[in-house]
Length: 100
Image 1 (spheres, rainbow, N blue to C red):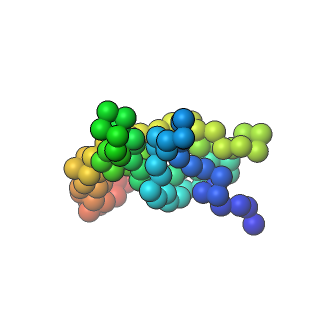
Image 2: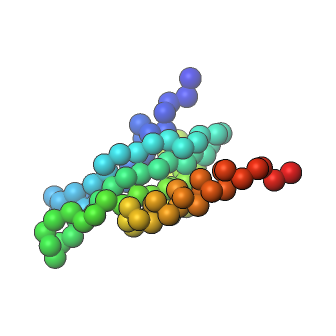
């Protein structure tokens, strides 16, 4: 059985002893062949406020090459309102009959 890509993928980032990107949660959306898509919930350190900012969300696409997952694409969702709007749009589309 293949290893779970989530074991090897993180957006957590530390710089000068400060966790600049704090990963709050992640979920595997899909994995097929050497590709996977991961959804993240995270927040970033604001050095001016010396505090973490609001929760953000992201979708990242990875490809496995030479035994390592490499990011190929990303989309950042910078607020809960933005995330809710996307969910509303997707739910509206999913409520419609599938195109033939």
